[in-house]
Length: 388
Image (cartoon, rainbow, N blue to C red; front, side):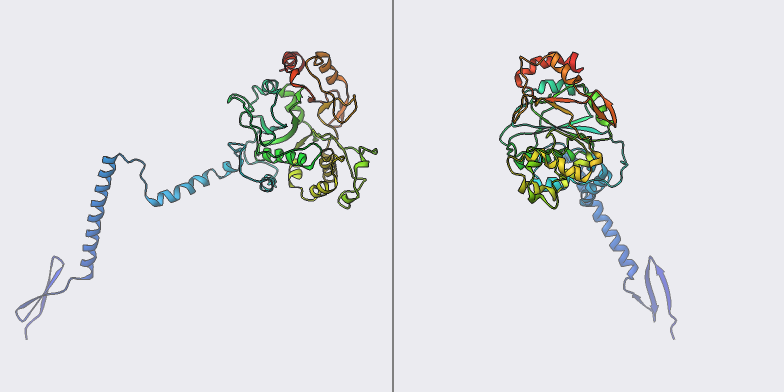
């Protein structure tokens, strides 16, 4: 019987039997090694060609598809808080009123902010078109960047023409038609509030007209609002024809005649009350349906609703001085001939009021109505009468 002997030569097995030599089939390990070697060679050729192509064509910042997919997600996660708190780059948007009010009604339930928040004052101008007193306001705002925001609601077909250096440049929000005494007046006010509330830094919201002027410098206005425990909206029970006489029984049961209130259209509210205004879906339809012209809904809707919701947060007075001494449906207007230092002094010193439950002499921060012709006189008075 012949002996059988095996030897290994370079991973190939040869069997010697009966004087013959047989070569076995390649093992799985050898096949795997050949495959790995082939793959490495292919990848090497691919990388060499790719790098030469990039160098030749001048292609930069080339990345694998997986990198392109993951990169935006990583960037978004790194700035997720910033994307919430950063003010919109523009006041223009494509939201309708329902979408805008819904978005603006978002409110944090944790009182303390997780970042260094600088509260700002939102100045909201409700006007039919131009802002003729803009140069006076420009002087008022100068040097106080970062502490205020500006929003302008005009008739929809009006296009403002401010220079890039103006604080009013591109601050005109998407607007709709407004009619005096109609519910669309309150729609415009809610629209201004909602747009301003998209900036989480805005804490105080002031409604103004094109005929309003600031009676004090910005620091005084800011401090007055910051240190106040209350928001400034007039809300009183008027028994006569201009008060309870405008009440409609259709307002019940949501609003009774005992809850019916009247106040100035020109208000200041903090963010807590602003949320209540833009989020309201109960009182809005009552006033829209039952406070028709001759009711003057803008004098009743917000004062009544906020008195029902949060009377303890209202100072029950306006910060805007208006002269109703001449009677009629509209207040007195001051122009070039009667805009004097004596008038401003009279406005500033004519009243005492309550501020944080104390009697003070500083009651008004703004005044109206001033005609475009008063601008030159106001600019001359500003350094000595207003402090700016």
